Length: 195
Image (tube, rainbow, N blue to C red):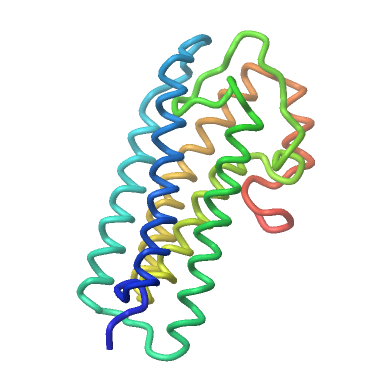
C-alpha cells in the first residue's frame, strides 16, 4: 500500500508544509546574516544542532522510503495529525523568531541592551523556537507514515537541541544575570508543565 504522503493531493500538502518550513529557516538565516552585533558566546552548538537535525531528517525520510516501520492501521488519520503538527511547528517557531526580533540569531549570541523577553510564546516556555522544531519533526514522522521515522525524527534533533539549550542558557545567565534566573525559575524549557 502506498503511504499517504506519496499520493497526489496529500503529496502536495506534505511538500508545501515542508517547503514552508525550509523557507522559514532560510529567511531566518538570511535576516540573521545582517545581525552580527553582540558577542558570540560559542559556535560549536550550532554545528551539533545542524548535524542532529539533518541526520534526523535524512534518516527519517530514508526509513520511510524503505518502509521499515510502515504504519499499518489508521494511516490516513495519523497523516492528517502529522500535517497539523508540521503546520503548528512552523507557526510556533516563526512566532518565537518574530517575537525575539533582532535578538534571534542562529549562533548563541548576546546583544548589547538585550533583555529577557516574556511576551508571545516566551510567556509559557524559555525556548519556544526549539519547541516548534520538535513539534514539526514529530509531525513529519507521522506524515511519513513510519514508526521508526517518528523515533529518529524526534530523538536525533531533540538530542542536538538539548546540547544547544545548555549552552544557550549558560550564555544568557552569564549576560543577563538575575533577570534571566528569575525568568527561568518560572518557565519550563520546551513544553509547559513537562520540561
